[in-house]
Each structure stands twice: as structure tokens, then as C-alpha cells.
Length: 235
Image (tube, rainbow, N blue to C red; front, side):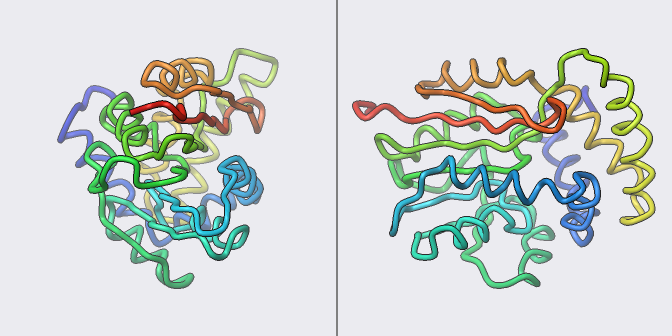
């Protein structure tokens, strides 16, 4: 999988998430012992949503982040966008959302459309991280905020052997039992390990124009929340 690029990679990722869509939320709860709920709350708080703000939940999946945003700020104007219809269909069982099918590298929105863009476990799966960040920068209003919840490569520590066992043995085992697709849950740890360190993602965000970039590591350094802003004077 790591050698795939462009359309081949997009097709592979789409296929993986299509296969696990019906059990995606359950597996998230199991894999994180329910901590992903707390992470999503923190992610939305970082977006600093105000009443009537325009929010894009990009790579919305089944809509967990979007629903958390509505819980915290019920009168926002929200779009939940994803390129995988099966994930969106699975999310509809938990309630209606304003869904849109969209590619993170070619967003169908005008410049300066949103006050905030949030994403959960999307960025390591896009074909070009730089293009995805540039698109989010483009559609944000001046002063708008980006918040990214994503896995990150942990630094070597005393927990490294345990993290390896968890990611390469337990996650595929549990994923195979719950979803019936062990191969998909080999991809998820592999994509996490091949992604950036938290510092590197912060640098990428700064390189496309975001400022006041920061991040916070979670879960023994395997998860991070990143945030940044579009300059008030940006064109």
C-alpha cells in the first residue's frame, strides 16, 4: 500500500473505509477505550465556534465530529463532507446531517467560505497532504481556524514495544473479530506509522500559510490535535 500514489492510493483508501463503514464507530470506541469521544470534544473546542459560524467537517466519515460541533454550538451552519458514500450512509443511522460528497484535494467551495475547518483521522489518508492543507487554507475566511485530530508517529520511549504490540497485533485481531476485515485493520496502523511526527505536521501547516500553529499530543504520543489560523490580512 505504501508504494501506491495518486488515483491508486485514493481507490485503495476508499475501498478500505467502504468495507469497515458499518463497524467504524464501534471499532473507534474499542481501539481507544472510548477516549476518541473526549478527543473530539477537545477538537471542537479548539475551533472556537461562535453562533452562526460556518463550519466544514472534512472527511466527516460517520459524522461524529459534526455532531459534537452541533452539541457544543447548536446554531452553527454546518457541512459534513466525505468522499466515501458508505461512511456517510452509516452515519445517517445516528441522525440527519447536511452531507456532501467531496474530495479533500478539490473542495467544491468558493474561497473564504468557512469560519472553521475540522477533520478527524483524515490527513494521513489524503493523496497529498500539502494540497489538502492548501485547499483548507483557501476556503477559510480571514482569521478562520483549522483543527486536525490525527494519529501521529510517537517518539521512541519505554512504551514503544507495547505500542507496537497494540498496533500490529491487537488492532488487527480485534478489527478482524468485530468487522470481519482484518486486512483493513492492518492498513490503519501502517498508515499511522508512515505519517508525520507532530512537529512535522505543524511545520507543514505553517508552510502553506497558517500561523499561531500549535499541537497537543495524546495517548502516549500516538494521537495529536493540531490547530492554526488564517492570517487576518491573508488574501
